[in-house]
Amino acid sequence: MHRIPLALLAVTLAFADGAARASGFQLREESGEGLGNAYAGSTAKAFDVDTLFHNPAGMTRLHGDQAGTSAAWVMPSSRFRGANTVRGVETPGSDGGDHPLGVLVGAAYLMWDPADDWRVGLALTAPFGMRSDYDEDWVGRYHALDSALTTVNLGPSVAYRVNRRLSVAAGPQIEWVDILLTNAVDFGAGDGLFRVTGDDWALGWTASALVEFTPSTRAGFAYRSRMRHDIRGDAAFEGVPLALAANPAFLASGATSVLTLPDTATLGVYHEITPQWAVMADLSRTGWSVFRTLRLEFDDDRPAIVRPQNWNDTWFGALGATWKPGERLTLQVGAAYDVAPVEDEFRTPRIPDSDRVWVTGGVGYAPAPGHRLSLSYGHIFGGSARIDQDDPMAGRLIGEYDNHVDLIGAQYTIRF
Image 1 (cartoon, helix red, strand yellow):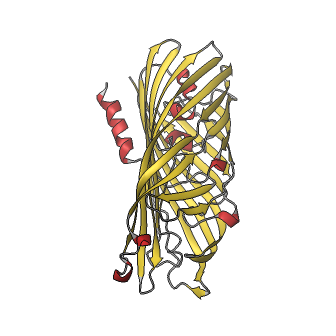
Image 2 (image 1 turned 135 degrees about the vertical axis):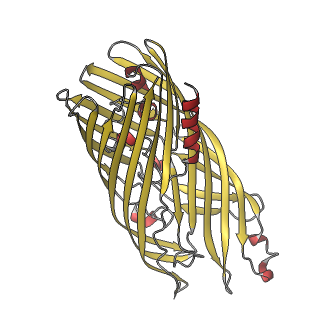
Image 3 (image 1 turned 30 degrees about the vertical axis):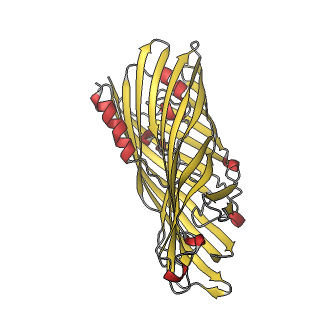
């Protein structure tokens, strides 16, 4: 019994890198089943152990010890059209290629059923992430080349059924973050590279509730706290000409930065019209206004690098429907609208975000008692995103990005 859950948790560690596909660099792909409904009703459905991420209070609707694993193959596309000029001279180069990287985003869940009204769970997820890699010769290389942010979040939680209608849950969040940022540097005779790496652990918490108005209608609310990461790492230059090698401005140094990841609050509803048909909805708010400035401090006396971000809080709304033509088979559809946190004047080539429209579908099948497999597909229409970034050293980057994403999700749950 214990070997399979431990293996499921280990698999997620290999899948923790992510490409940001919700607003900003938030990831929603913690559920292959939920993708089928565009994550509508995720805080209220409580069908599978993925409720440990969306609303741990939903564990009280599940019976027996359970384990589950989820994976989503994220295939983003973003192409730039435009130019960069440095002191009036246009930077030669390419459009950067299709810079976001396709990645596998995973999650794993364990749940124990120790008593009638109590449930204990453990979730391993990647709630934030991004990976981007521009061609080395792209015109905006002095602004950005590689960008990577990886999170691994371990979330134990306890749920309690207060009465036949109300369940509550709470637990800590233990999170690790790792970053990599690079950009080219114009040394006159040729380009060099500036690289920043770092990581940190942080603590947060989550609390949630599930209200079951009737056997066919319920609502859920979940809150995940913000987390402050005091990132410590290194900053170094590569390809520095010999004439500048002794210049203190180009020496390697320890570096620190503060990254506060936002809180989220989500309200969801689920209603069964008939035993075969159900509808659901979710409304979520992410507190991206905490992301105001990127500030890199060096251990030596050189000035800090400061980049304003000025992001706004965002909303995500989703609607979905489910049809059960038989005891074993479930069919899903969903649609969602996801608001970008950044306005045109602050959009950067590292995260050329735009408002998104989601359209998804999925199928679930129970091959045997205690087993459930879900497969899903989604397409995100990102539209165009204008950029006008002016930096004294990197130049002025003006242009437009065309964005879209394809997602394929899978989930398997076992009840022991």
